[in-house]
Length: 416
Image (cartoon, rainbow, N blue to C red; front, top):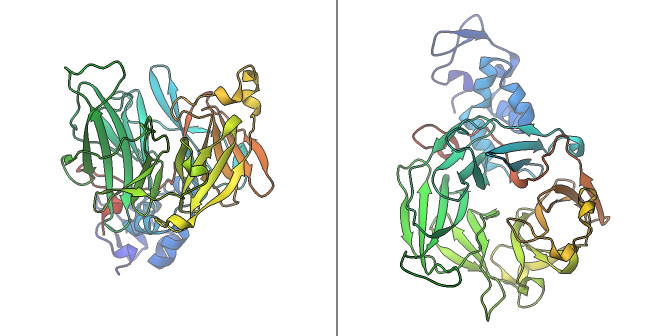
């Protein structure tokens, strides 16, 4: 393997300066003289906020932060259990994105920082429909075109080609990366009906699955989808598979968990236990300790968390812990409204599980207004009071990185 200093576009002169392609130079520091594998190992351990400061020290360090070897190392390593939290806020007339770094020692008092989205003028209001290995997938507020792939920490972005849309439709999104194929893909599941069809209730009898692979130039169509999925972006990416839950049917209220393999592009049903909380009709998929999990809602704000210890093995499901009812301080002004009647605007539930942190705390979001940490070992709740947090938001767990996207639509980490 070539050393970093021998990469094309950079070369060492006898006076220990790094020369760029444009002929400019900057004095070398000790960092550039370290062996590439040691250098990459050091940088891969830094939190994203430290890497952001690192790349602005000088031009040579900025190049080090964007080294493809570092990006591949970040991608091949296990996902951080102390990721960033991106807060999606629908401000009047425009959407704002904020972030908090959860890798700092005492994240509870962290200050919320705002991203400046470079495409704000073209798409002032948008939804975050997916987060994966440093990149966000954003769509129009009504889940239509345009669709952008965006790295909020580098400000790199691309606008995807237009996809097929229908006059009367409902869209379910997924965005993920497969560790074997090294490809990012956007999955767009469209349920629609023809204009002449009329019904008292909204029902979309037709469906179509559309796929876009970063690095290509057009969407592909896979045909119909055999499942009726909840209109919610996939929140669980496990082993290169996206996961959703199905809608309950009139005579079959139990929901099923459906996966989509980003390699062979096939839908499959994930087995559930024959008995237990997963036979209830209200739960959402999550990721706990790198395993597929399901947060099952009970009465009055209680919740059970089930974890599939061995993927796709029915017998490996087990109830990991139970979370009791809790009223965050910020929401106590709503005491006149019964807890059981709270409704999350997007998920249909008052509380949503976000992730598990390195210290085994569970991060929860209550009613799009409060982030709460829960310690299952002590059964204790703690309101997380980020400085400058917006009044209403939707939280997105994000593993930050310096993955860049060139204008051809290819992501750097998709390279082998």
